[in-house]
Length: 560
Image 1 (cartoon, rainbow, N blue to C red):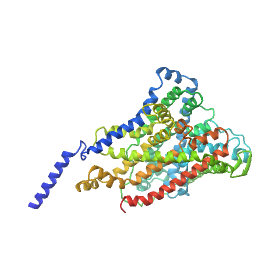
Image 2 (cartoon, rainbow, N blue to C red):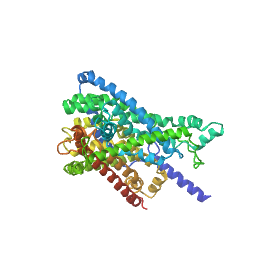
Image 3 (tube, rainbow, N blue to C red):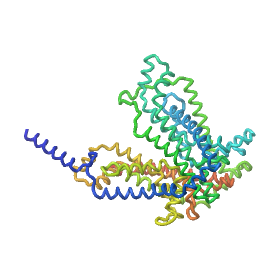
Image 4 (cartoon, helix red, strand yellow):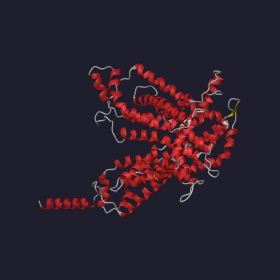
C-alpha cells in the first residue's frame, strides 16, 4: 500500500506541476524562444500578407472607386465573370463528380486509367488548356479546320468555359472522391436488404451523403474560376472579365489605380466564397467508416449508370489527352496551320530562353522553400498555447482567398519603394508566390500535427527536452513528409504561375511563363508550344526527383 501511495503522490505532484505550467488550453507552458519566434512570424505575415492587401484597398480614393466601377466595360466584365463562373463551376463539378464516382466504384471499366488521367490537368500551366484548344479546335485547328473543314471561332465564353471545365475538374474530383471513399458499402447493402434496387440505393444513400463534398467542390471551383487569369487571357478574346481587365489596365493603359479598383472588386466574391467553403467543409468529417467490415463488397453499379459514367470519363479523357498531344505536336511542326512538316527548329530556339527557364526554376525553388518553411513554423506555433493564435491562423489561411491578380497588384504597390523596396528583383516574385501558396502548406502540416499523439511529446519532455529540442528531434522528423509535400506543391504551382508573375516581371527577371504568354499573343504558336513542352518536362522531372529525395531522406530523418 505504501508503494501505491508513493506512486499516486508522484502522479499528483506531476499533474500539479503540469497544471501550473500549462496555458489556458491545458498545454505545456511555452518557452521564451518560441514566443519570440511567434511574434517574428506574426510580423513577417503582417508584412507579406496584410501590407500588400491593405496597399491595394487604400491606394485608390473613393472617387476612383466610383469612377472605375461605373464604367460600362467594367460592368460588362462583372456580368461576364458571374456568367462564366456559374457555367464553368457547375460543368467542372459535374465532370469531377463523375470521375470521382468512377474512381471509387470497383466495377467501372478503366477506373484506374480515369483516375490517372484526371490528375494530369493539375500539372499543366494555367494557360495550357486554353492554348491547346485554340490549336486543336480554333479556325486553324487540327481537328476543326484540317480534319473536318470547319471554320470555328473558339474565342469567347464558350472556349473559356470548355477550357476551365477541363482545367479545374480535377479539384472537384479530389474533394468529392474523399467523401465517396468514406461511404461504407454496408449502407448501400442495407438499402438492398430493405428491398431497394441498385439505382435506388445509389440515389437514396450515396447521393445524399455526397452532398457535402459536392457543395465544397462547387465553392472551391467557383473561387478558382472567378480568379482564373491564365485561360482567360489566352482564349477569352474580346470577352471582358474582371481577372483580365486589371492586367489590361496596367499593361495597356498604365492605370494602376484602375487596376487596384478592379482587383478589389474581384476580392469581395472570392473572400465570400472562401469563407463559405471553410464554414461548409472546414474540419468537419462526413465519413461513415466504422472500422468494421471494411472489405465488404460494393453493390453492383446499374448498367445504364456504369456505361454513362464510362462514356463521360472517356470523352473527357480524350479532351485531356488532346491538351498534351496538341502542345507537343505544335512544338514539332514548322508553322501550325501552314507548314505541317516535322522539325526540331523550335526546340533549338528554346535555348535562347535558357535564362528565363533558369529563372523560373530558381524562383519556384525559393518560393517552395519559403512556403514549406513558413507553413511548418506557423502550424507548429499554432499548436502551442500562445496568445493571439487565432491571428496566426487567420493570416496563414488568408492568402487562399486572394486572387493571383490581387496579390500581383498588391506586391507592386507595397514593395515598389521604401521601406522595403523589392521591385525589379527576384525576391518580390519569390515572396509573392511563396506566401500565396502558404495556406496549403499550413493546413497540410496542421493535419500532420494532429496525427502525432500527445504521448510522444510528453515522453520527450519527461526526458528533459526543451521546446527547441522537441521541435528539432521530434517534430521535424515526423513532419518531414509534409515538409517535402509542401515544397513540391508550391514549386509546381510557382514554376507555371502567370497571374502573379505577369505583374512583377522586370527586364532582369523575366520568367518562362511570361515569355510564353508573349509568344501566344504574337501568334508564334510553335515556339510557345515548344517552350511550354520544355516547361512541362522540367516540372515532371523535378517532381520525379522530389519523390526520390522523399523516399531516401524521410527514413533517415525518422531514424529508420
